[in-house]
Image (cartoon, rainbow, N blue to C red; front, side):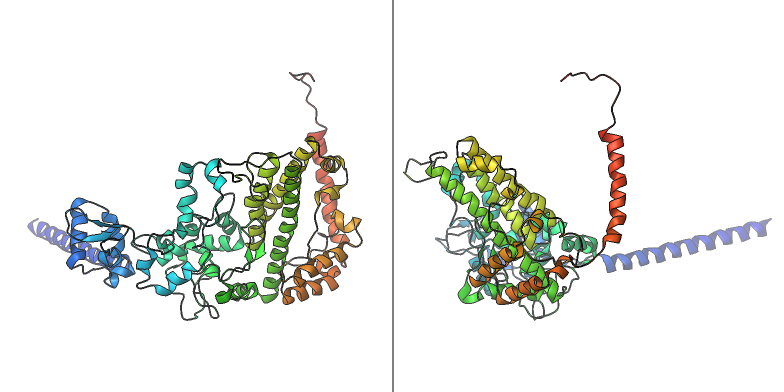
Length: 538
């Protein structure tokens, strides 16, 4: 019996020892795994005046997270500390003595401070349209219609990216690079651009997320490292473009730039579309700017696709101008006839210019929306592969504005407008010159161009279009390369429109199915009558 007890005790002892060993091994393995996966805590050497700043902030619990963010930054790794950016001299506009200290610090580091190390980036930014904000061109009536306090956290929050500082510098670097980390990854995140490029008047983030670019980004987002270097003419290191890929980052042919205007061929946010002349003396003309963008596009897309896509988007910008012309001409006419009125301030200046904005009468604000909201979406959607914004949020709503304006004019006694309203000719919805292109960038659709009213009604349709596109080329609104590309399509338009191909047998399969659908909805909905009496009798 004693021997059995001793044997059992020995077994228990061995099991206990092996259990402890196993536990130790598991702890060691877990520690190794955690060490491999956990982001290493950076050891930052803080000394001198900077140590006083850090110690005091931590002791008093003031903006401690800002210090933690700074510790993770490239600045901290390179021993660039608080006072290097917040340095101040007596008399500086933002200089103040930090409480319980005897040295001056700057409350607002400006681009001039950043330029001490980032001279090229600051210079490029200052030469961009980001730096040129509406402080230079804002309309006085905006402060009346929206009231000043509303713009403080509205317009100004975004437009402060072009802040004009008392020291003469321009910009707000941390509008894109988050304060204290100044992370490149944060600046490249599409939603960072979407902080400002969002909403009814410039919904680029919504357009991006609607596009194939945005869909691919969402599918790969968790795998992407956006903290990459974009220098030295290296290939783009990610498989999908974010906003900066097209507008700022470099590739094999293009250097990185902080001038977001360097690759833009249109001013498509303005009341009229026009080819950019921004900093032409340094950036080159619009064709040079467009070629930079195309060089980035060629990292992923075939040249013929790029050529056709941009040509189509360019024609959309030109088409917008012709629609805009109708709004402006009618507003001038109605104003001249006294049917609309210009608001005059106590200083004698107009505060509601009917050729630019207008706020208080239907024709004026419809013209405004057709530019500032729908007109921008129409053009920008065409440039950013956002079909819904070109169509339903764009041209459809512009046309609705047009109908509303002309109906208002008819109701207020204008004979031309009344004639337009009473017309039953569908072509009345195009009271402006047209642009077009045979086919599209996506492929050949053998049936899409056999139905439109204008193609059937006007035998000289394409000749009219040709003369308009030629005029745009003659006036340097299209390049010679684009004109020749358009001509190539025009001369072989039956191919690009798909009208030369007979696909009736395939098409009939779908028309037959459509007939079945039509019969079903007529029987189940249109012709279906309930037996109970209605509660309201007409």
